[in-house]
Image (cartoon, rainbow, N blue to C red):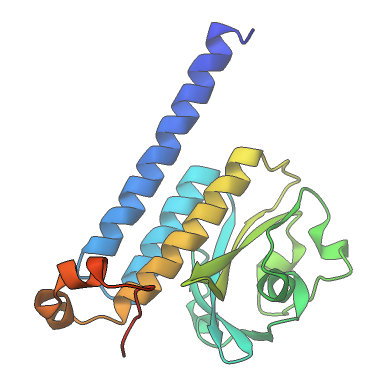
Length: 198
């Protein structure tokens, strides 16, 4: 039977998860630029995971492009590109699977260095696909400079955040006028899956 102190710690961590998801959900309903939303999500993930780096890559055809980061290298935003099968990030996108490496991530055979990113030397690596409408549209990475054993809870949180980012990307394609003029009842009651009309 778990000790009361262990239960308190687990309860506090669960409450932190809930707050993280609530804050991201609020980003989804506000009128903010997509860049502001992604940077806000990155900041929240860093706060929750206590990681040293959080990077969001989004799909551009067969490439993945760095679109948000907590680290101070703004010149790399929009410029760092990799193919969908390149490196650990590309592997996550092409395999549509989470990867968690607790130490020496740079020694993994799938790893690829980018000379301009200090994260290339970080020890621990946790990465999840960003999913929108059941498609991989990007990848979110969390990295620690020192070895870090990722918990099941951290893995589940990053997976969920990847899904939330995917929803943000879908919502960003809708103008406020489209939301105002939509017949929401028809969307719900019509047969078949809801389609996103461009």
